[in-house]
Image (tube, rainbow, N blue to C red):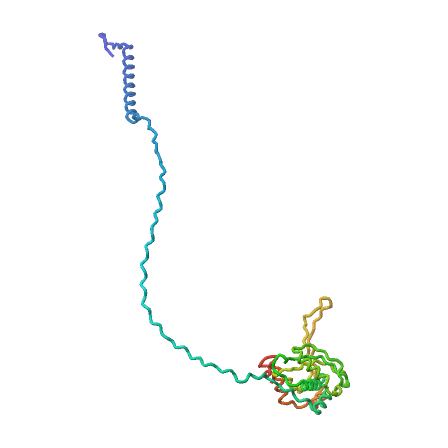
Length: 297
């Protein structure tokens, strides 16, 4: 701003100041654009487009298999032979054959019952005429002859019915292990003499096994327990037919014999023999084992 001669300031030319400012502004903007363009050209130089790379592949034939021979192993060293001990063979002494073959076992027929034995059997009424049944079997076996070891030995069991007068009413075979034993037994029964009358005066029905073997015989029975009542027969308390009324079944008590009747019965018992005791022990051991006889004694 200028000061005039009178002391008052004078204003410059307005048009000249505006043009100058515009020129300065344009120059500054041009310089700024130039600097920016140069900076951009330095960061991103112009690069030509990349050319595509072509890779060529070619398949080669597989290499031929190379057969390699296995190396031949070196032979193993042979160990030296050891001396084999010589063992002398045992001397075999030939056994001379027996001069005579073994004789088969035999058992002669037992003697027939005596008249006294038949007389005792005809009056012994206890245990379904036990003495009569044993004497009858002993008579049959004594008439069958000697038993020889072999295919003809065996046993046969009959169901016998004897009429009150002592005659044979019926004879049925229950089972048999030897037809020869059955044939000989039937032949002996058919040829038996007249038997005494039954002790009770009624028909006597029983089963009897006749042993025709050289290893067993029917020994005499024991009579010392015949006066005692028979033990109660076992009956299953749980058996039920599914229809009747189910009632509990109790064991029947053993009836005690009358003292006088027991005393009279004991008087008629015969004295047991050693043979009877031995036969009883054999039967018990065969049925229940070796300890059966010791338990009862």
